[in-house]
Length: 497
Ligand code: ADP
Ligand code: MG
Image (tube, rainbow, N blue to C red; front, top):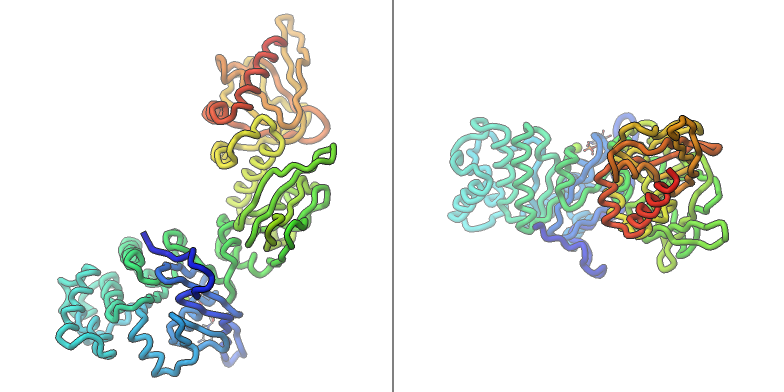
């Protein structure tokens, strides 16, 4: 596995420490600020992906670290060395000893053979003794699977092979830090995969790697991704929480988001108040409380960085159903999005919409269904992922007596009525079900014929989560309360049928 040092004590500073980096390009059209005060910390042995859409500032950031270009202001330390203070010559000398750089375009010298290209950094930096250089270059070519072609010119091998050689060259000075700007961006997908695997291997051997990549799936295989949007780093917890969004949408979030810190124990949203914002927790912890009609508050959930809240009131356009407070022993930092931005994102992103619907169903299930209070929340999440939440209006028939059925329902909002049609054709009301109750499970315990008709009732919409037989059985195994509740309800229902 890749060694990583996430748990180093705070006192030991990161290996790469870029602070408040600003880069202003002066162009004939005026000044353009490509980096707006970026902080980037990378620990020794970490493999970090830099992601973001084209033009967001990724290469500019990378060039500040390699010293290929200079920040307008800000600092870059690597291993404690202040690179931002070095002149060209000092920088070239430092790079030669400590850093390997790989670009999207391979940049091998066309008149040198492949092995000579790999020897070049050792020659320039006078590393190793001259006789050792060729041997070492051959070993590096071996590492990247190119030793058989060592004496060919770059033009005689494919793009993927040239990139392998470029990686071998970047390793020639045995650097602690490898910086790569879209090293697979110019390769077909199979070659890109094999080059990426080479970086994974180098990371596993302990190299620190910072790699710009367009490929989200590959970025996910590194230790950590840092997303850049409009010259700023998008908070990693925001990226994580809104993984359903694409780069453009995340850039929009970055432009609109409002960071706020709440002191320990203070309320971020209050039950009963109208909802105007959506929140992502970016640091600390928060706790969710539901106040019952008799006035006592129950803790229903704990949230950690990367989780969000406040979406229910925005989606349902009803008052907050819960109070969320910063945990009593720690402040909570949140990124808040206004209703308009949130609505726009939900409208534009079917995957965010689906995810929110699932989360809302799960939260309602947890807060409304007493019979499930002994189920582990992760388990509940697994069992309900992808299960549909159905919406009915009063009078809608949800189940029809005699029909076949293989699902059952939890009422998340509203009410339902249960009717039985007797042999003489008369329909009788036998039960009223309120929020938190379930129905439809009798058919799952018998011959799959519905034993009664269930209709939405009451005044407003009725919402119910529909689950299948497998979820029904698993829930009975996971929850003593639910299993007992099912037994009791079934016994009682049968006496009334
Ligand atoms: P990325 O690598 O994420 O695609 P870049 O860092 O190359 O983005 O560019 C960020 C922004 O800075 C872009 O809008 C780009 O046009 C601008 N930019 C980059 N280099 C220069 C330059 N030398 N002069 C002026 N503008 C530049
Ligand atoms: Mg770039």
